[in-house]
Amino acid sequence: MIRTLTSGLARRRATLGTKDKGFTLIELLVVVLILGVLSAVAIPIFIGQQDKAKDSAVAAQITGAKVAVVAFYTEKGVLPTAAQFTTGLDGYSTSPDIAVTYSPIATSTFSIVGTYGKGGTGTSNSHTITATTSATKTP
Image (cartoon, rainbow, N blue to C red; front, side):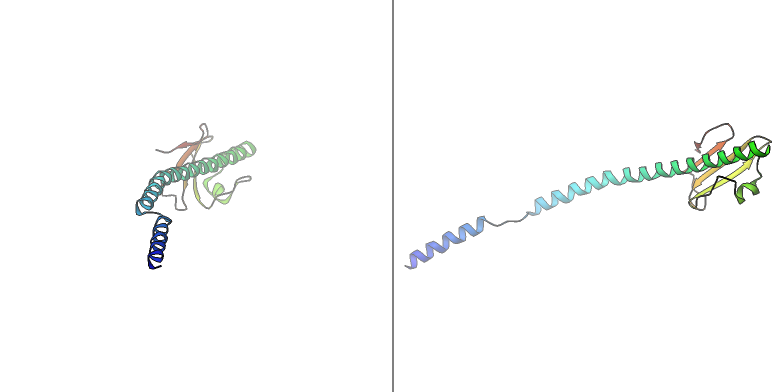
């Protein structure tokens, strides 16, 4: 009878040992390594997309400013002064994230510079537009 109990317990222990479930340390390390590689690839791409969005926002903002300046010129026959531009032109509204600088150069030429950032100090997202050109990124 003891032999029967002992052999039954041995069989039970053998089956318990083979039914253990879980992940090994190697499997967990492989998963962490894969996640690290994916994040190393994804983060720079995400940052690049943010820069492209900022560039597009600045270009759209100064294009809108150009349209407002040309409309003012068409209506009044003269370019607006920098003070008139700053106080606001019909059909143009400023953005809190984009600094726009307007400079009348001569009787019918002007330059508008837009930079992403409230202080307008960055150059990576700076664009310029003139009376005869479209928005171009400032080098």
